[in-house]
Amino acid sequence: MELDYLTINEAAQLLNEKKVSSAELTQHCIKNIKQKNAEVNAFLTITEDKALNSAKESDERRSRGELKSNIDGIPGSLKDVICTAGVRTTAASKMLDNFIPPYDAHVTRLLKDAGAVIVGKTNLDEFAMGTTTAYSAYNMTKNPWDTSRVVGGSSGGSAASVAADQSIFSLGTDTGGSIRLPASWTNTVGLRPTYGRVSRNGVIAMASSLDQVGTFTRSVADAAELLRILAEPDTGDSTSYKIPVPNYVAAIGKDIKGMKIGVVKEFMGEAVDVKIREAVNAAIRQFEKLGAEIIDISVPLAEESLATYMVIVPSEVSTNLERYDGIKYGVSANEDANVDNLIEVYYKSRQKFGNEAKRRIMLGSFALSAGFYDQYYNRARKVQRMIKAQFSEKFKEVDVMVGPVSPTMPFKTNEDLNDSLKLWMADLLVVPVNVANLCGISVPCGFEQGLPIGMQIIANHFDEEKLFKVASAFEVSTEWHKINAKSKIQN
Amino acid sequence: MSNINSTTVVHVAKLARIEIAENEIDKYLGELSNVLKYVDHLQQIKLNDFAEQVNGLVNVFREDEVINNNMRDVLLKNCPMSEDGLIKVKQVL
Image (cartoon, each protein chain N blue to C red):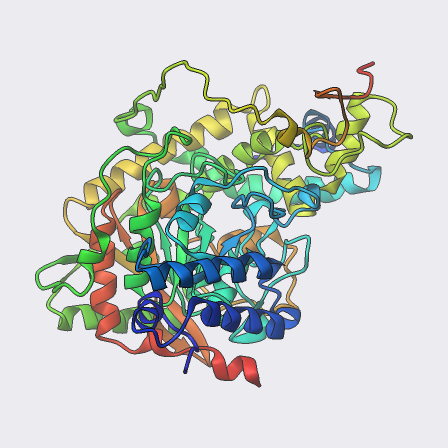
């Protein structure tokens, strides 16, 4: 039985037809993890025994005809900021090297309740801060398409796990492109739902006003399938929006004739690699062929998103990371006999933060400090409101907006990845979605020298159905998503 | 226009309880200045009416009832030092 690179829907069909068992699917993924993890480093923790156990339970349910959902028995993975009861969760930080959460994140619980099998926890930039996964305290994840390239970040391990056929889907988080960027560099589908659509309860916080959980899959239909499960409102996250969950799957495969697709001028400028612009322009012609109406639009304030983001994120990071004080959990100097008092415990424990975490904490502490709060954080919030308003205004003219995901092809792993300003720039085209609290999806739309290119589709808040409709119409009429990294990894 | 110098760096590190060595001050100063230079043009943006408008936000409350299912011992397992069900810390002064 050919088990390579199955989508959720393909795997579910094979399971239903009794052509494969969940145990076999799970073993397939675990075999690939073991074969490739030394090179790709997508996984920080492999939960083999638990996974095989859940697979067995799923197979038993299936034989009794008691399926929990369409993803029952399907193996997936979780970014290591998503808490898993009894399984170490590190946020790729030495600070949480020994942290074993006593509870599941809401999304972990929802996946388990749906019968999904969790094969392990994936690598990321420490506390989800970065665009390459090079800032992981446990070594970077390499791009399965070309291991001399970065995979993107911060949810790089999740992207690689799907691209290297180590899990059929993966959950990540997207605070400023951390799902869409690595998805675009790995030929996977990366969905960042609207802020408030998915509960963050039990997800280690980075910048709370922007953080959102989303998915990596091999098809748009799979993303819709997962969001239907994950979007359940939750009292454990006060920003979880209590509106009904539409049947996202119904949006798949629909005609897009007459839909208005806006091409955002600001996303197609000189800063974007010409090959990437060409691929996106070809995709736009495809939409035209499908009968959509293409409208050139301009959202000038979108260009202010990155600067806004670069103030808001470190500010919220500095407050969120205050909790790592060596007292309640995490690695601590509390027991160190040479440390005399509480303040020394703080200083010594916080030495475990990596360079980027320290940089952002320092920057944020500065931006929030007396005398500078108005000039930086408050100012950024004001500009953010203007950006949001401008996007809202433009969404009166179009159903969705499109543009590239990344301005460049993936960096080489031996480039200088310590220049944090350069790395922030990789997020230039993805942060507007976060800053304006919109939803966005990255879908495969081309290749350049054997490396994948992603197109971004953006919809207004809580308009995920439109995203799925447009993205799936593109997907079913093109072949890009069918190309996988199998031959690359075996060489 | 950057508001930051080596004294600020030392001050901010103290606020954040981050230990930095004498020879790291310049490195931080350079890195922070770079970012601040980039974000500086936020100051030049002309604010419009939307800048002050907060719409559609509501407070989220729940009933003030006990939902705690006594996880004390489980939570304390992650705690570096504890005694008799309490978190233990070093002396404050």
